[in-house]
Figure 1 (cartoon, rainbow, N blue to C red):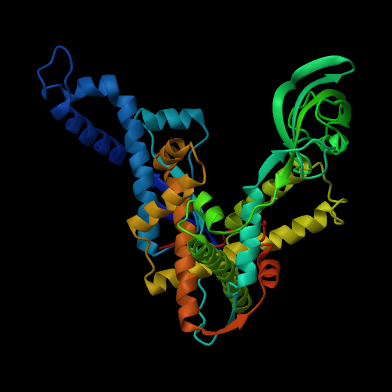
Figure 2: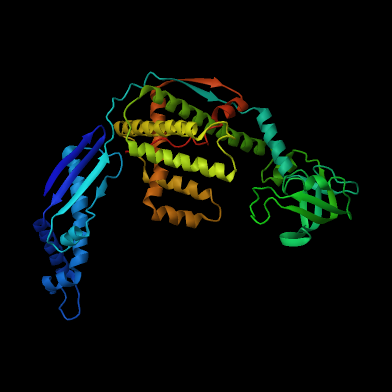
Amino acid sequence: MQVTETLSSGLKREFKVVVNAADLDKSLNDKLKEMSAKANIKGFRPGKVPVPHLKRVYGKSAMAEVIQEAIDGQSKAILADRNLKPAYQPEVKLPEDEAEVNAVMDGKGDLAFSVAFEVIPEFELQDHAGLDLVRHVVDVSEDHIGETLTRLSSQAKNFEEKSGKAEKGDRLTINFTGTIDGTAFEGGTAEDVALEIGSGQFIPGFEDQLIGAKAGDDVTVKVTFPETYGVKELAGKAAEFATKVTKVEGPKETVIDDEFAKKMGFEDLAKLKDMVKERMGQEFGQMTAMKLKRDVLDALDKLYSFELPEKLVETEFNGIWNALTNEMSRAKKTFEDEKTTEEEARKEYRAIAERRVRLGLVLGTLGEKEGVTIAEQELQNALMARMRQFPGQEKQVLDYYRKNPQAMMELRGPLFEQKVVDSIVAKAKVTDKSVSKDELQAMVQDEDGIEGGHEGHDHG
């Protein structure tokens, strides 16, 4: 067996490996002897199948296993012997010549392959103990609680029948038949449908045309389906709905008192307020944590500058770019609509990809130094939280993650990243600053966008 380094440039490494035919043959015979001791083949006593017979029957498949084991073993040995940390799974290139491959499979030729990868760049960890950070906090006020209770009361509002004309906010019960060019279409007919005017439940323009209608009225509603409508056959088409109003109801004022709290499942109004205050505290706390994390990442981004593995950057950029262009396609938007060009957008998102990779490497290295680990229970909790995001599909989500180790790693990454960020915050100089709810929301509004995505890579 011979290993030759063929490339060492920047972060790139490539090695050529040659495993001679004699070594492959020895490994093949060892494997066949193992099989012989366990094989149960008709015509032979259990464990007494001759190796030559096994070689005739299973030689090709056994040799394929031997070759794969040689590739895996030598790839790992290259890294271990030279103390190299690859930035991603090394790429193995096998011979393309069919005759050469057949010779190796027949045990008549040496196995030659190459192993290529980029190493994790070396960089000096900075002292983060002196970082000055501001934790933006929002105190839950009586006004916040009142706003939430008002919203809850509007969602749980009751209606009572009225004899006058329908107004915005009223609830109508309607029957309708929709037609396009005089022909009824699938899904365009329904009876006893409850529709609150102004709720945006129906396509734009439909609800407004029912303002002023009374119980018993027939109204012809004329609308055009949006170009982005989910049913392709209806998108952009003009339609008429012959609509019968069978009932008009006006909203009853909801009094926020103990009785209202009981309807919401609480002992009294005080207990409901306590719940609202707790939930809002959690919500504001999450926003505070998001803002603080972004500030930590911004600070780290300014502290570090080093060469990045090209393939990691390219993979990150492709993920961002595909998400961006798919969203633009769904929204039927162009770069011109976004007041930019494709070239400028590529440059911008390439910089974001580089930032993510750089911060991922920094957080990974920091996590290793700090001994950050993710306990199995923490991972299971994250999986349970993920399942709760898909009500009714919990089993499918669970099966998906159990069958996909890479998906489980994607759950692990954010947990690892947050722990490293927490360790940085614990050593930094943090000053609390009170801000309003609107101010904090404005600060974190881009956190769910492409730029606010997960930046850490778990190397722990």
